Amino acid sequence: MLLMQTPYDLYGNLFKDVQLKKIFPDNKTFVDCIPNREPEMIVADYEKLRITNPPAESIKKFVADNFIIPLSAAAGYRTDIKDNVIEHIEELWNVLQRSADKPVEGSSLIPLPYPYIVPGGRFREVFYWDSYFTMLGLAESNRWDIIEDMIENFAYLIHTFGFIPNGNRSYFLSRSQPPYFSCMIELLATHKGDEVYKKYLPAMLKEYDYWMDKTHATKHCVQLKNGIVLNRYYDQLDNPRPEAYRQDSTLSNEYADASQLIRDLRAACESGWDFSGRWFKDGKTFSTIQTTNLIPVDLNCLLYHLESSISKASALHKKENEAEAFTAKAAQRKAVINQYFYDEKDGWYYDYNISENKQNNQKTIAGITPFFFNIPPENYIEKAAAIVRQDFLKDGGVVTTLINTEQQWDWPNGWAPLQWITIKGLDNYGQKDLAATLAHNWSMLNIKVYRNTGKLMEKYNVIDTHLTAGGGEYPSQDGFGWTNGVLLKILKTYGLTKENNG
Image (cartoon, rainbow, N blue to C red; front, side, top):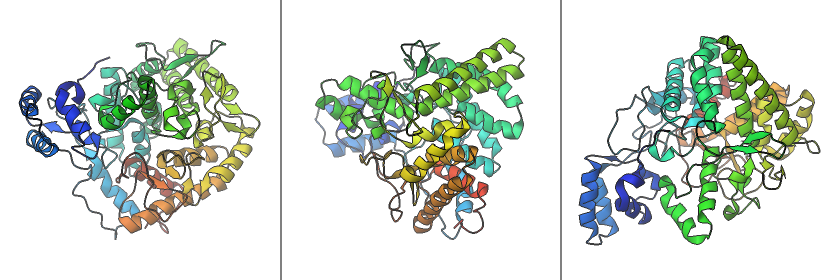
């Protein structure tokens, strides 16, 4: 597994001083800065300055003199709200598109060989699981060129690093994100045919080996007492995240077992749900985070899809033994998902608690994910649909969890990928009216906020639909890749394009 130096590694005391002294409000700003000369020279000059115990303003000026400070992903772009929302999204694809990267010494950006779409706001790089939901909209825009470019980039990352990192930054190389690569291939195959599966079989196999601890001991695998192996999220590091160094360092000072807490915090970042009461032992307190002690139902559904896709690709390659092996793996995982994650009493899927050898008690919208992948028996949908309707469905969409912890992946927030997973899961099992209701509620909230602000947001408050966006770990971001993609997919799928597109 190839490693790159992070800004922490490169800039030492300069990095620590910038992050801990709040030179920028957001710790992600400095780690995304681009040096305008050799890092070693910058470090040497800063050490001379540091002897004088410089005030924050002097450090800020030093950074400004020696680095290009990054702007928002859509800096300089202004919406014409006279445009309807579909025209807005079509225009934003070009605003959020980046060309193939050129390497810059000392930059945290991992150069990618093909163009790609970034999410927006503070997210100036490609993000793994975001990209699948962005692609749903790109497909509706007939932008198959950029979809294929992005898949090529992800295959490049797999072959270069052994996996797809959280994003193309050096400080993300200790973790991945929900593995949607096989879903991207499935999407591209609807346009280019099954040859796509054959082309990306080596990359899918390599990603599978990463998640199954075959090439590296990443500790993503958990063996239960009966020998069954399932998967969890697990970051490879347990020290403060460079992109959130100040916050994580504060935690390190507050808790005796800070390394485990930060490992679980980082693992939650790999899940994409950063942060949520879903990962908290008591469901509400951040200090009880236990991500690595949980086997997430949605991760294992994704690996079922990866196993099924490898089986299909192997069959197309006429690798019959490999195809049969992965058919068996997928079948076993499907059976285990229904056995270990499903609660027959209430009819919902839950994460599995490793240390307690039982289902976790946090009810979250992740429990609908098996229906998205056609894993449950047909008769499971009635109870699940009732739970969606009674517990999760709100005026603006489905809420993520049922507890308000003030974390951004909890009540009252809704997120685009989880709306689409729920809509498609319900639709797969014949719950057409409920799926359409959710599609309507979410798209109307998106469009209402767009009309008021000219922006599509990263997340929304689906309870109070008068607000422009939901709260969270950092200020609300606009752009926004997966919101654009899911909204466009919904508008086109549910025929809402003429009357309700802003």
